[in-house]
Length: 327
Image 1 (cartoon, rainbow, N blue to C red):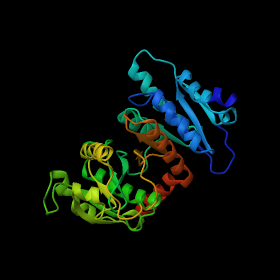
Image 2: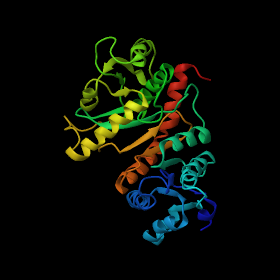
Image 3: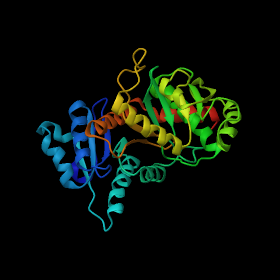
Image 4: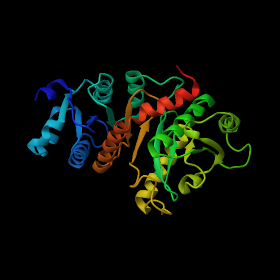
């Protein structure tokens, strides 16, 4: 297979999506990533995967697929390094580079968040005005679903950073989930004026004074219970430390007890994937939890393919940059 040797995927059919999958990312990699890649391939006949990592792991995917499907798999070998950390991190760096060079359309990794964010920011570049690209997760709520950001990328942001994250979140809800005039709230410990730390006290006036993409509007302070119900806001912004703590707590609660009971069908159908999208970079980068299962990773791959087919990243960037007057 010439494509396998070069790491290039040549795709001609409509609707095809080429996803670079980091085989080394995750607590149980590469075995669980192999499982996810197989499930994703079996579910989507127009999916093409660039498997980045050990050749023996990629070979497991190829060996488990029918001969007619093996042409949809390409490999980019990563040899073990002197240090485990450098070897593992080289997987996501190589996957990002494949997108930057046009060999893939999107990246999926369940590896170290910091390494993924840094690799994407350096390898793909940040959009104008984005100082710290945030991770955005979509949560099930009683009303449907809600975009929460940041969930782990920027743990100690300043006011300007959170304001940009509000823009990115509003564009995401509008473009990807079709939310008309997204309601954007700021997460804090109470809805009374002046509640919260220095950052939370400074932000309301700034958020109230900006125009948000997609006709979004700032609706004020929200609390944790509002994230579960989803009745007050469509997008909730917070710092990456608080967002990550909240996300992991909710994920565990939903896994043990079940997600919130919907008062009707979610806006775009099935439950949202347990994966976050890195916003504000020049490419599609989907991040799964380190403890993600095979089905979780398959859903993350499918999500990355969906975003590529929607041209979502470019649409969000155009929406934000046009509004801000960026040439």
